Length: 351
Image: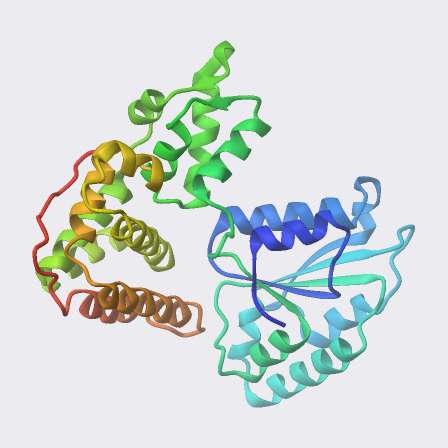
């Protein structure tokens, strides 16, 4: 089956459609938690969850035990939902265990129980392994790091759920400040909703006052370094972010967000002012100006190469056993190997 985004899975569930097996693959904690919750709400009534909802660990239970549960009719419920955490742990077993795992899973997935939905969770899966290929063939693989919804739209939806409303430009400012990362965006919406109080409205100024846009500023700094070919300094910046607790997949996602903005900015006609660009890009005017300045020094070939490099890094980071630092070093080397000409270095401290 082809991979889908988290938003696509949620849409399917809303239409009453669910496959017998699902893989939640990726590191984004917000989308993982939301997919879990939506699966529970769609498949198991609240009053049945004590006996029709179970969570097991692949490290503690072998595939045969989990399949045995899946083939057992649930009590007092028409359907059961089984979450299997740490499915990548099966890749670390020896050949004998792997053969047993593949045999049990393969036989079950060929003829799954009609009353069970199995959900395998993994941060990474080595796509070269037979386990990953088996799951890709028979299960719906959900890429948690490809949300499938625009960050500003997500911010608006989350605010609405909390009974608050973004004023014009505020949702875009929040999406920009969080570099589109759903987990952080959700936390900031919660904070802003509390701050809004009885007014129930959130302004762009509220966002600028309360949300520290550290990662957004860092990715624009990296853009300057990539453009100047400052590979060493770029790698130092990446190392600092990783030491602060930023995850490698999260950083790749933030860089992908930046390059998507650069691609859109490159499509703007000459003479577009920062206010027009801000509306088109969904950014604040000062940051839109920065995006235009960077984009004008990049060719379509350079942008295409950047997206290819980011996609490869994302795939490698999702593979079991990948060295995150090595992956990021290779990515930085590729993104900074062709200095863009004519780029005006414009570090944005307020991005």
